[in-house]
Amino acid sequence: MDFQALPEGCIANTLSFTTPLDVCRLSLVSKAFCSAAQSDAIWDRFLPSDLVSIISNSQSSSSLLATSSSKKSLYLTLSDHPIIIDNGKKSFQLDKGTGKKCYMLSARDLSISWGDDTRYWNWTTLPESRFEEVALLHGVCWFEIRGKINTLALSSNTEYAAFLVFKMMDHYGFNEDPVKLSVGIVGDQSYTKNVCLDPDLEENEMDDCVFHGLERPNVRSDGLLEIEMGKFFNSGQREDEVEMSVVETENGGWKSGFFLEGIEVRPKP
Image (cartoon, rainbow, N blue to C red; front, top):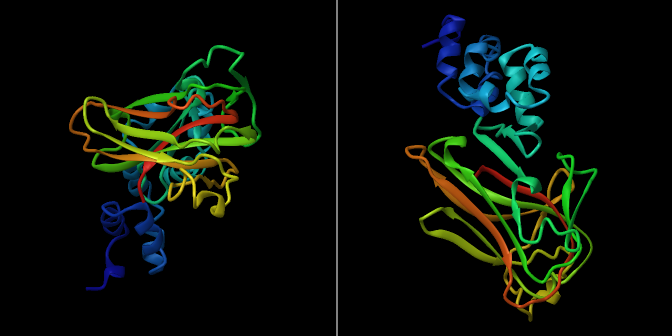
């Protein structure tokens, strides 16, 4: 069968049942496919049905919708540039390859033990941050950060992972004890692991200590650090809350120099 002989609308309808990544790849097959791949009908199916509701309280929502020349343009903008929502407390983005929803909960949207006491934590800015402010740790011996997200806000039938996003400057205390990361549906089993948050520990320093074999943070494209906290599957068939935590409270060692950007929840590759 000569697919290029099919009407453009038929090709576009077929492409809409694939993924954004597949559409981009198939657009290289022929001029007919390339033309069909620009169709608003395709990209409208890849955009969340509740998109307007999600971005309605964003200061940039009106300009975003007005300046997007097509549904494809809107999709690519949302996948390349997170939009700040929920009065600056969260960011929303689309996974470029799948169109699945991604969120980052800012430090302001998280529960930080002693976070409202300026003797221990303060609020400042970072040039790398997407938010107006981040939380700066001056010094605590009880390191605890918690956050929640409702599964109805996420894409259904999707495996997600949560990532702690942060930066370290003139830090201390994180080279003494592992930090426990946990992710799980409230009321159900949680995924828990110990990690090393100190990015400056050399491999040979970790061989004969409590950090041996533990995961370490990676540098993100925005210059911040991240480490995977855990994963969960969202069926979308019921409403649940996912709880995420970062804890080191057992050994009483003081810690400082930690900048908290937030916790990002995005689909697993």
